[in-house]
Image 1 (tube, rainbow, N blue to C red):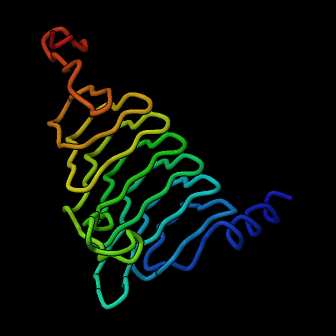
Image 2 (image 1 turned 180 degrees about the vertical axis):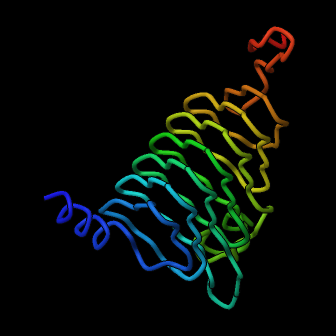
Length: 190
């Protein structure tokens, strides 16, 4: 029975993408577009309902996107990632359910026609440093880099980058605590 379960898991939960490490699974249902631009390291778990969409073209625009996870990454259910540039999630990260990451956006020129028909604009890659925890319903905007061992509070909107060992929360997110190695505690910055 154990062998049958492992065979079923390997067939159903291991999509054909550019690179999928040993022991990694992407649960069904899922939406994976442009599979050749997605890399997932070893021992990763990607929850059901996930959307991974490296965007290679939009009208006349052409892109070279990449979505890449390191090893031992957990991606919660119903997370969405859209990339025209790069989204990189380092080893040991945890993204809770309903997290949204996008490194680009449609143009919003009032005289540019319909928003969905305007060119996509990349505001820069997204980088999530190793062992970072991102809470439920967080949105990470283009050009953001989070350092190692950061904690992002539930429903935060991250519009700028933060250094290692930061605890951030809010909309827009700001630092609320930093880890103090001398006391081994998270200390308020107020």
